[in-house]
Amino acid sequence: MAKSPTRNPPITEHLAYLLAQANREINRQLEARLRSEGVPVEQWRILKVLSDGKGHSMGELAEAVLLNHPTLTKIIDRMVSDSLVYRVQDPEDRRKVLMHISDRGKALTQRLNALALSQEAHIAESYGDKATAELKRLLESLIDSAT
Amino acid sequence: MAKSPTRNPPITEHLAYLLAQANREINRQLEARLRSEGVPVEQWRILKVLSDGKGHSMGELAEAVLLNHPTLTKIIDRMVSDSLVYRVQDPEDRRKVLMHISDRGKALTQRLNALALSQEAHIAESYGDKATAELKRLLESLIDSAT
DNA sequence: CAGCAATCCTTGAAGATTCAATATTTTCGA
DNA sequence: TCGAAAATATTGAATCTTCAAGGATTGCTG
Image (cartoon, rainbow over all chains, first blue to last red; front, top):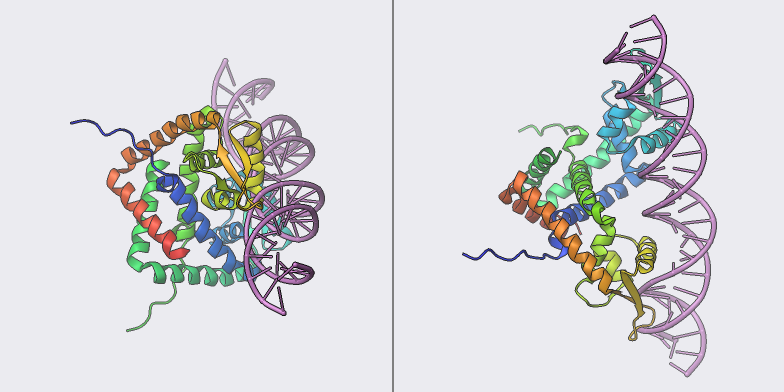
């Protein structure tokens, strides 16, 4: 049997493109919701990670919120100015800086969580619970297999 | 039956986060492959769209490659300098600029297509043909329902 | 235990993106 | 048909990100 020649798919059929497109659209929607609190998506992620109340090092945090170190440092600078988070030097390893969330940050996080959850609900409604759950599962497993 | 209280999921369970993470990882891999030709992912997308040989207006192109107008204009400036594409004023509507791919651009696109296809193949191999196809299907339908 | 390499974070400069404003052309209504 | 409004692309300034380098601390090795 002859091997089929290598297809040359349009860009819209590439996984990388579909991911970029979906990411952009969902991110836009989330951004629009968070705008009522004037908070960029990245800051919401940071607040959410820190809202466990524990101290997180900059490296750990950068990894968790998908930012590289210098970018994170500068965003954190702004958030410190806004009294949302604060820095504490790690006593165990003085190279590290442990980030903590402030009370003001906690209060804001609660309001942001509500906005984010309402987006998730909106998606689940128009897209379907089943499809949403299945998509999440596939994405997680893709991330596992790609890392 | 009591309604379950609103859960407060960790950020890693949000669809927006999973999409961002998967997108970043896949994009990184693609970027790494394209690096051998020294071409950023955005330029590959542009070349790929233009490789149908037809003229595409800037607006059309911006939409297709997920960039906003000013960003695209500046990337196109570079690609024109590199003789990969060229501008032609649309005779039907002189507000528009129709972008065309050059011979040099076509040759480059062929090499880039091979690199991109090898990435797709690599993913399909480690992640599974079935899962890949299903993920693509779900992403397309998410994009439809979200737009 | 001395010094050298590795880790962690920050900084400043360079590069890229975005926002707002502008120039040009077309469309449409009075 | 004239003029105002809309559509298209570009530009320059402001903003954000990234890259390369540096300062501080820790870990490791001879």
